[in-house]
Amino acid sequence: MHKSKLGGFIIDCQTGDLDRAADFWSAALGMPARVLPGSEGDKYKRLEDTQHDLHIEVQKVDHLSRVHLDIETDDIEAEVRRLEKLGARRLQQIETWWVMEAPTGQRFCVVRAGSAGFEQKATQWK
Image: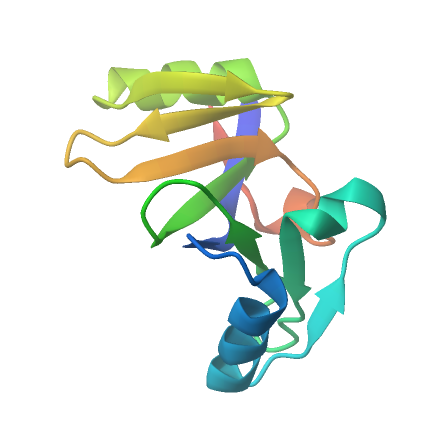
């Protein structure tokens, strides 16, 4: 058995100016932007969501701008297999997570659990 839940949203921005993109989304959503450490900060800016406890980032990408969601889980392979049974397909493994595509065409990621309330809030799957 494993658990999973909505982890948050990633705002993919095809931009040469990540700071400007993060400033826009920070102001639009009323969430302060935080610089991430090391080389991670070159590609991502974290938006602090104190209202909903979701992981929200602005990400610099090479593809067209879009928003995708992350599903967090305590067992990535088990969650990916569960989602495949529902019709999703694997597109690409990146480091420890999978980029997937829903049967309706939306892309999303399956990532390691990291939220504070994961154990209490996540759905347990058989």
